[in-house]
Length: 94
Image: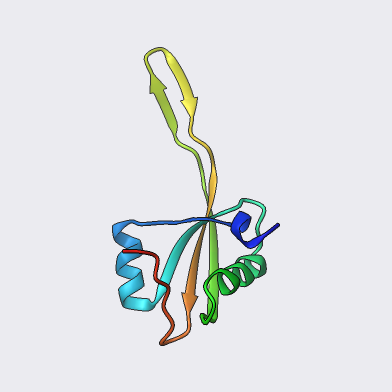
């Protein structure tokens, strides 16, 4: 898998922005098959000059949704919280 297939998109939520400012951690949606070491290498390759200090991952389960009589489920996805060493930062655009 290439680095751009591993890192799907950065997450922009209130919690992610607070974590970015307070503890220098960034939240990403990643491929469900990606391991922590693959995520670490992908972030360091996509954003040169950044050194990853730690990676935490979690599976986010899909939610039940209903439209009229039809009941469905949203997709499951994987979230990675990447902590960078002090002084490094990523310009995601916000």
